[in-house]
Structure formats: structure tokens, C-alpha cells
Length: 402
Image (cartoon, rainbow, N blue to C red; front, top):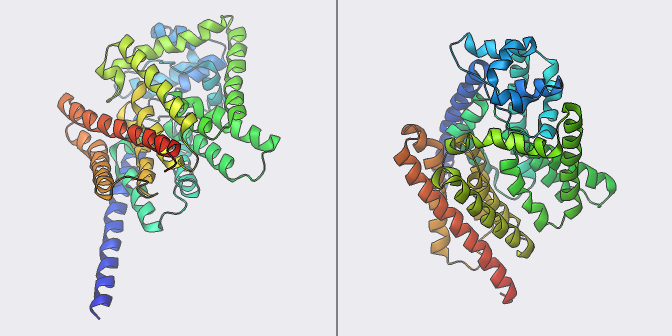
């Protein structure tokens, strides 16, 4: 009888947790939708429209006043100026990536904003489904549901929706590439093309997905990686011809626009270190991640992907709205300890959830002021370094036959 009461009490607590988290998630998603309908600014409809019109979006980004003389772009900027908000073109995407938005330029800016919001909500559902079908396939439904609700309730996801960012779009296609690669039975030409295309699209947020693409290096999918990059090289050359520019210009120009934003990130290396030093450190860490991806023994997908997510968010410029993907690192703790003492593993698990709470909620409470970002950043880098050391230990254990 006492055991039955205990089971009922446990279920009641679990149900209460889901209800509370569900309410917080619903309020968060509602706020994100409301903000997206009013203030969504990062969609880059204007840059895509300019390129579609065979105008140089990078040149216009450097001289934004010229945009006022282009009637086709006027409606976009009036959506913000009518509300007293400043808005200018910031074409920090390569032309092959802006080309992915060409279908959206068929619609008016207002209609495109609504369509993009709906697509982001669909991408969210798609990411949840694909994560469940891949890295979280064997996780109890309750635990996975809690993780998803916490992600939706967090500030990063709410802001991601609210500003009309592209990370949901890119991460969805990356996870689709992972799903196709893991679940299609035969290595056919169709599979190679499908995975390559999804990777090709996922690079829209290359600051996140380029480091994540090292996962395909670990999976020995060299052909898919090469094809996904080749597609962008080809489209960049096409854009260069259309605009009458050189191929090198089409690579350098978006990077020059992006460089103006480097110091405005959250806790990434560009905020902590001077520009040149940050790039050098990022390059060294990136090479280290590539070596780990090549040397890590099979059946360590969760450990490697967690490591790649952690470092992808800080190697280059990222605002904290991209950190909703941090929820995926939860999979690191679902595979057992693998030669790590139980008490150390449990401490790491608790540390991770405290880090999630800090990134998702505490930074918002303190308005992301400098002390809060320094504190959370220090905790974040410690966790990222320890995860890297864990992966290195897995490599050593394999070599030692453990």
C-alpha cells in the first residue's frame, strides 16, 4: 500500500512538473511570436531582395543610405521606421546563402515576415522530432519532454523566434542530414545527394553548422561534406558573374560586414579576446576538434556532438539567442559513465543543468550585463574544456584497449 502511494505521489509530481514547464513554455513561445510579428529584424529579406535584383548587398551594407533610393526596399524599412526603430542592411551572409531566401522575396516584406515566423515554428517541431529519432531515440518520453519544454521556456529560444533569426532553419536541415545519414539503409547516390543538399542548406548559419559538420568527418562521410561545400563555391561564382565582381570579393565582402558585429556577441571568443587573437585561438581549437572527430572511436556520437555544439557557440560571433541548441548536450549524460567515476559523472550532470539555468534564465534576469556574462562565460568554458578532455580520454581508452 505504501509503495502504491509512493508511485501515485511520484506521478503527481511528474505531472505537476510538466504542467508548470508547459505553461512557462507556452508563455515564452507566445511572447516570441508577438515580438516576431512586430519587431523581427534579422530575416535579411532586404539583402536577399537586393541580390535578387542584381544589386550588391554588401556595398549597400557599407552605404545604407543608398537603400532609401530603391523603391523595392522602401517597404521593408518603413516597417521599422514607422515604429521609430532604426534598421539598415547588414548582409553578413555569403551570396550562395542569400540565394536560399530568394523564394521569400516574392512576397511583400510584411507577408514574408509572417511566413518566416510560421516556418520557424515548423522548424522547431521538426528539430524536436529529428532529435528524438536520432540522438534521443532511447530516452524516456518524460525526460525528453522536460528537456524540450525547458528549451522553449528559455530566453534564447524566445529571442530566436522574436528577432527572426536563421538558426532554427539551419539546425533543422543539419539534423535532417544527420537523420538521413543514420537511417537510410543503403549508401546510394540518392542518399549522398540528399545528405549533401541538407548540409548545403544548413550552412546558412555557418558559424554554428560548419563546426557541427565535423560530425560527418567522424562518420567518414567525406563525399557528402565535399559536395555540400562545392555547391556554395559554384553559386558564389554565379553570383560574382551576375554582379560583375570577383570571386574573392564575394568571399571577403560578407566577412567585412560581419566583422562589424564581432564585439557584440554573447560569451564567444570575439568578446573576450582581441580580434586577431580570437581568430587564432578559434582556428587552433577548430583544428583540435577536427583531430578529435577523426580519432574518436565509433559509438561515441553523443559525446562528439555535444562537444561540437559547445564549442560551435563560442568559436565565432554568436548572440545568446543561438544558445537554445545547448539543450541537445543533455544527450551526453544518457549513455552511461564510460570509465568515469559515478560521483564525477553526477556532478557534471548537475553542473550542466545549472549552466542551462544560467544561460536560459539568469542572463536575462541581469540584462546580460558584463558581470553576469563573465560569470556564466567562465562556467561555460570550464564545461566545454572538460567535455573536450572527456572525448580525449575516450580516444586514449580505446588505444589502451579499455
